[in-house]
Length: 137
Image (tube, rainbow, N blue to C red; front, top):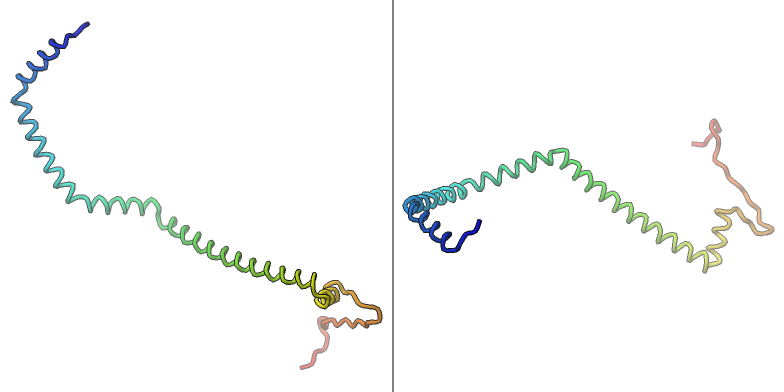
């Protein structure tokens, strides 16, 4: 089926003539409804925002907020533990440096932790009293 450009143009022209009056009224009514909808939208915008916030709060819920708060507390605890472990690592690095460079520190470590003694030294081990032993007050 072939359409010529002239046939389509004449068909559109005849439709325009038949619907000419109706089109003008429909456009005016559409413009009026557009103004009414714009006014309603301006008045309803705060209500829509409040409803959206309420829906979001209901979706997250109190348990979601509590879980978020718990995550914050856990993060603070982990940050404190990381800080403590960093200080402990720095102290161990200082101890290693002292053991490598200071003979006196090496000797104290050997005697304290490995129970090593030099020839001729006398070792006296003191043990805490056992249960039921008399104690002085």
